[in-house]
Length: 158
Image (tube, rainbow, N blue to C red; front, side):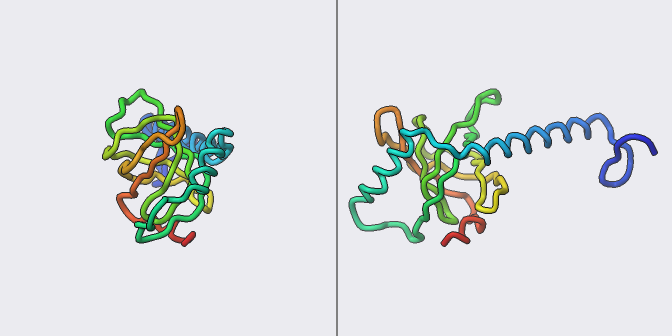
């Protein structure tokens, strides 16, 4: 049999070529996401200030978060189809959520999908809910998302 075949060994139809193209684009996008770990200078400064300042009170988290710096992309379910994802710069994580810094004021309580590199380098698509987003410095916001399901990949950091 000439030409490419699908997993079952049969010929690939046009719709399968399109799905393969979509998967290739997603993999290329995910690779770019993993390689894009350089933070703007302002983000490093804000994260350092937040860490130095502490929470200012008793720790209310059941699970502590651990430092985890990477760039992530958030697509809210309410976003339009042509809208680019929101860029988040993560600062800490546990299996239930993560803290971040962004240059966008994001709407509280909205759900979405977070594309983030796991510690082993795989890119995860995690359903999440935006819990906090408040101004940390002029034009910059710090916040947190709650993972809708525990993420064992980040539990390994605990």
